[in-house]
Length: 506
Image (cartoon, rainbow, N blue to C red):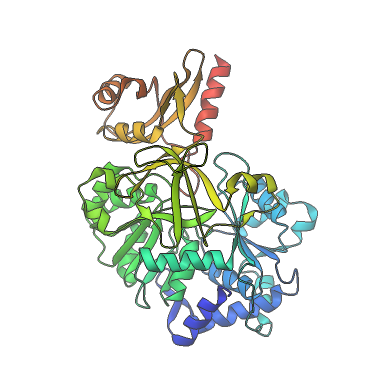
């Protein structure tokens, strides 16, 4: 089993159909993509051999497809690098993975070269350069014969809580992810399109195998990223469009669609995840786009595949369901457990654990991290949640984000949902701050709606009307924007550090 087989089968069925697009322009058919991937595989095999790691550090680009499938055809592993990282962070990933090849965009290559140690600098190939083009002159490699347990994708966690760790995902893991997507999330065929507005290095890229398996075209925006007006245009230019978007991207798209008075007819599905989608925002987006939404909950360690909130679930008026992350995915067991590892009853909050063929084998060169995350065959996610009697899972927070104030657990997600129900609040993030009397107190960072100023006193009254007094924020900080990574996750660590620096100055 090798993921290249997905491309191989599709290229045989629809050799002359458009496979890869840049904006509206078709740049490769399925036969051309297959041929280039096999030629690249022959060149890659000359350095590193079977099991080599191939790092890709670039903005979204059409070449991502041939690099991914070329690496798999060479029986190498893809190491996707988030292009929004600092060059030093990119270098840490490349060096930790001991990448034999480093494919980088022109924009990123110089900074990455300066950050890397000498042996790795010579391994950089600039995408689109003469050196890059020369790699495709080789005779095509033979079709790979690969152990399903072989490493296929070395995914470095986002690092929102510290140094990134490389989750080792095999061909079997990613095939399980792909099959679960096709079974649960979307019905895809050759008349569908995938728009890569989110980074291809993680969220959007992990759905490539499912779309390729069904012969659906791959569309890279000309901007190489997410520009809401461009996304709306692409939905009109390509058939039956689907995309993975982080919740913050969904909000931006909604605002752009409302401002332009547009509802794109070609928009088929938005799969959202990677961070909390608050109920109020979800309701607004459903009003604008209709019921095109599916939510996924997963982690890099169990890629995109733990639970899902079905399209039909979004038609409910039950806020408890809309605020949940849905039901366990096909082929995955999910539990909520206490500190002793025993399953908890419905309604009780504990740590979410899961197991199945999609779960990683461990962290690259990190036995301690592996031992902490994988226990008795289960992945311990570090997320806190609870099941209801119907089997819907609701996330409460990361275990490290829970605020313990005066001996009581306070879940920031609940407080954030409350704050976002205020008409003057555009974004909210809640963290804990050390306090001599209470241990920790709740602090809220608020981004106000433009033109709708809101005060701490107004928010205090709003919270007291809706949640217990001990849960309300003790302080409010009004800021222009929340710090986020490229996946749309709020970097709570940066907010805590901001509080710590303020305390030091005091």
